[in-house]
Image 1 (tube, rainbow, N blue to C red):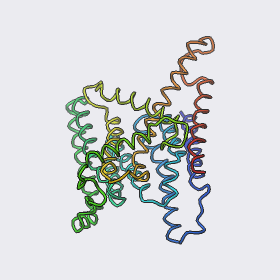
Image 2: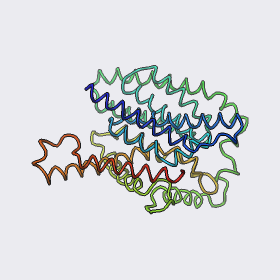
Image 3: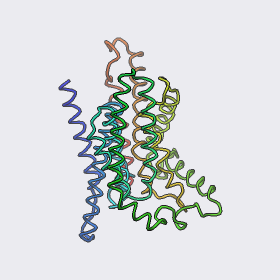
Length: 356
């Protein structure tokens, strides 16, 4: 147990170092004003903290290995590195989402009321990052609804009553905290309704809104899933393959409703992936790559799922072909482990080489 914790510490430390180097390397601050320098450094800091936050979130949702893989992929993602270096507010959107989801999940999982308060602080702060965040309340509500279904189906009556009271208390504190934090935003939106629905920026006033939305959707899918050997897509072609594998595999698992309800962890991931980009789809013209950074965390989680599935298959194949070399199928053998390391290094090189 101690050795496992020590190994995890060094793995996470290595990922943080990689994230910092990737975001600071080649960063030229000399030509910037003081205000611009502060903005860039805050953005870089939010990018590194997002890597740490994703590790913590995935560790609670699934396990340490997927947490390490997901955070590593985010650490070397050229898309995330680029947005971190630009001093753009868009990096703070995914940053606040990661930590608000992390504290909501901890509050539900461990029953700590203070976690709901912290989730409310991060959740409320997200509204200051732009329109792209405005679908987050719907995701929060649907995750809570799914969790409610889970405790109704899986908990005994006495445990259900206790958990229900705890969840309602936590949700109330979360709501109050968010409302307190966003009150200035609400007043501004009331005074300036065009902040949310502007004819100049959104397609709702367009004569062909559905054509525009469909075009934006196709653009996003094309940039994510176009498997090529150039720099046309937003994630490298090996990562695109693992993302597709993870998406299909985890979507199938989610829709099976094995215990009479949808998996809450998977609901969070898929709502994040499909609901949060809606404001981007409604944008007139082609979507912004910066705004799409909001869906990078679930993309990396699903890519890590796909990558680990492939490695597990290689490990099992190695066990079947060379049974005399194994006492049991526990952990990774040397060959699958080396294959995983080689894959991660190749992905890192492909991603970072696009911006270096």
